[in-house]
Amino acid sequence: MVIDFHTHIYPDKIAARTIEALKHAAKEVEAFTDGTLNGLLQSMDAAGIDRSVILPVATRKGQFDTINQFAWELNQRQNRVISFGGIHPDDENPEEKLQKLKEQGFRGIKIHPDYTGTFIDDERYVRIISVCARLGLLVVTHAGVDPAFDVIHCPPEKGRAVVDRVSRETGVTEPFLVFAHLGGMFVHRDVEKYLLGSNCYLDISCSFKSLMRFCETDDDDVVSVIRRHGAEKMLFGTDCPWNDQKQTLEHFRELKGISAEEKELILHQNAGRLLKISD
Image (cartoon, rainbow, N blue to C red):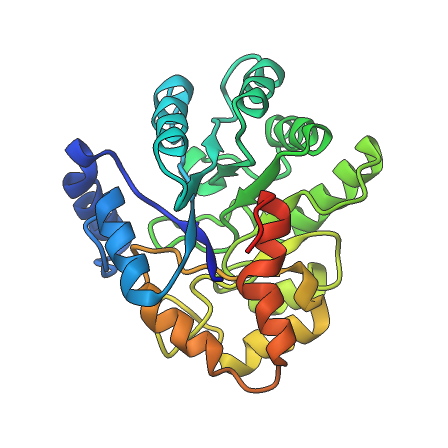
């Protein structure tokens, strides 16, 4: 089994213009699907990927109901993709909203500090992450540089401070945060300094310089992170549609320096445990 823990889709009626807008904002980054559910399923079939996690982003206050209704309906009508929920740091009553997501069967939420213009250690995000930790909802956050923005709202040092603070204040010992893009795009040295070995997961999306130009890390960096952070706290992800799922999976399978057993942890066993799915 293979689980892609980091993908995106959009409602059919807005997918085309959303993809074009994001391509332009990110300096013409390439898209490998049309941004729809069918496009992702076709990509998964071509790549040999069994499940994909959809990560919606609330970019402004007031989108909670619309985004999460779309996500909930996705989860009800099929089981090949598993959509997380989304929340904005300015949304009111986050405890109530997150409890609702938990009751609806969501396994986690996605946040994007750059799109909301809010640093990861802002009290609003700390509050949201703390509630999720207590509820057993995983939080996936964009980390490091986003090519569409000039400010890094989730740098590794702030991310580590949040992990330590929420762990201390909630008493939750299981990792509750996933830092995307090998812990932080374009800030790899700070990832090594602050995040490796800490109580969090990292996904490997957008981590291979040979596959995309918006990347500073190469195969040796990825292997080093897995070795130092621990394969049991790593997740396979592609950031589809912004990377090709088939190409990324094939590249990961060919990595030297990590064992077949470690690759299985990263490709599906860790994600399967977090999502409560089995082979």
